[in-house]
Amino acid sequence: MTNEHEFLKLVDDNRGIVYKVINLYANDLEDKKDLYQEIIFQAWKSFPNFRSEAKFSTWLYKVSLNVSLTFLTKTKKRSRATEGIDAEMNVEQFELSERAEILYRAIRTLNELDRGIIMLHLDGYDNTEISEIAGLTKVNTGVKLHRIKQQLATLLNQL
Amino acid sequence: MNIQEEWANLSQQVTIRSDMELAAVKNTIRKESSDLLQSLKKSLQYNRLWGRGIGIAALVAAFFAPGQMKYWLFAIFLVYELAQWIRVKDKQAIMQYETDFSGITREVIIQQLELANRILKVQEIWGYIFIPLAGPAGLILQYQYHGKTFAEIIAMPYMIYILPALLLLGIPAIYLGKKMNAYAFGKYISKLQQNLKQFEE
Image 1 (tube, chains in turn yellow, red):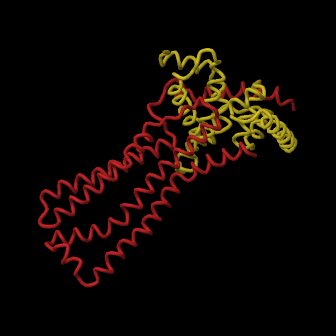
Image 2 (cartoon, helix red, strand yellow):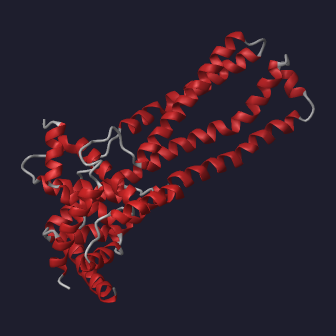
Image 3 (cartoon, one colour):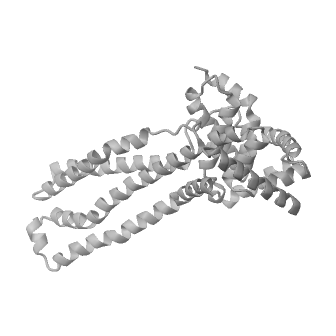
């Protein structure tokens, strides 16, 4: 079995996947950290079920999406005091370019399942793979993708 | 806007940003989950410890209690132990249950929802049995502590009304308990239900 260090190395090599997911599901920096750690925790726990014939990136994508879709963000639970700290930290954070920010905001307006579907699609997964990951029929995946693309196009025209 | 191109661009920028934001937490695996299901499991565990604590306290007190109070305390111990025993397998199964998050998304959501509902159901059943009994049992024990027998307590004026009234007071307490659970875990269950519904839309 892979040890913790090797596992973290594998995650680090594929961290872009987790980053994309948490950025589209978490509401603030503290939520992002919490969700990131929860994904890594659940991935480590499920890692014995990972079969080496599968791609680690696809497996990590599945774990990241599943954790995010069942994770309740704690934004509202936090006190106003920590909001000040978050705001302060946001000042120093890396700003997305205008076009990237527009696309990011548009995808975030979609419902949680649709966010996952469009993310997988944009990252090159075909309809069969998406339906297998999500548990949708292939036809339903196609219909959803068509609708999501239309919705995004409308949103991007408005933003 | 070419969405595919912008997505690649966004992905790169998000990686740079997240590397900065998550530098402190990136290379560690936390010891336990922070999700709400874990809180539900913990609450179930406390519930079990709480029940066991009351049962054992009643048993210890039974050895030192005077007169009939001894039997009442022993009966309380038996009821609590019986309740623990009836649900023990169910509770153990729940506590040991772990979700495999690398499974199919729809199935993972269904499993989480079923588990959350099952945990809340166990707590609810526990409440239905013990909350209404707490008032009358407490009153009887208090009188017995002051030397009264059960027959004397029952024969006291208005006791025939007081005991059922105390029993009925359990209803608002059960309602309050349900409200507290809904406040604590309702958002989680509603999120799972909402996400599951999105599969059908």
